Image 1 (spheres, rainbow, N blue to C red):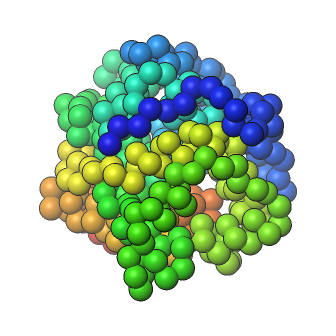
Image 2 (image 1 turned 180 degrees about the vertical axis):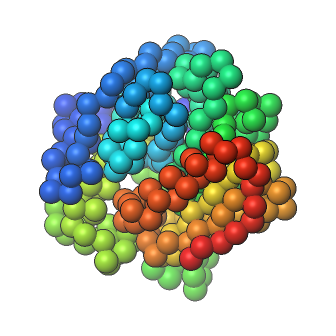
Length: 335
């Protein structure tokens, strides 16, 4: 199913307000937005301008971060702040998200793959490889890219980290609503209403409690809930709904087998949006192909790099070192 992303229109929240949501100041220093070292102009083949930022030394080893549904590059602030002192960290707004334009191409796996390929072309020198990191829809982006451009994987990637993501059956596996898809299947109409209705998300203390209950975990801090929710709220409701309708039918089953470099998969044991079964399926695909580095389960909800920031960063550091040494992938698990 291909879904056209809205370019403009009444979306309840003004652009300055959405920008302010993404750039709030927090007591947790790592959540605060750093200044980019460089803004890299990227225009897609259909003319959409994408927001791409580089942080850290220009000659450092490169990490490319792909965010998930309803987010923006600020979602990666904890990793940008942790890694930009040593590495060149690239973060970008997916098409229609943040400050990236929607363009004329419909949302779908080919669009995700084409945009990612063009971003890599813009940010990497000839022959340079990077550690690629994708969360949620960002992980789907990397899988779609590997499926559409398998020859680019070994050319552009030294290692890959896929975090709380999926390849298929999102509609029938999400357990965000109590009871549904655990005790009884969620009807299609209810899933479409929940995810595909273009309504603004409220903020405030009550919404933070809901976010902890359904998106994170009860152990999440107020800063973690506020940061994650603010980034999600900054997405235009019309884009959030349109992309959700496309994601519900996305099928990238088997695409991870084309990730022919050491690849780590991280799952959240309490993830209700993309439950752990998704990550395990991808890890099994990688293991069968011989490219699974490690399968890691952390005690978090969906926002694993926020809730388990230190553990996530440690895993990424380890994977970068492995890619640097050019080691072969080995099957392993941490929980």
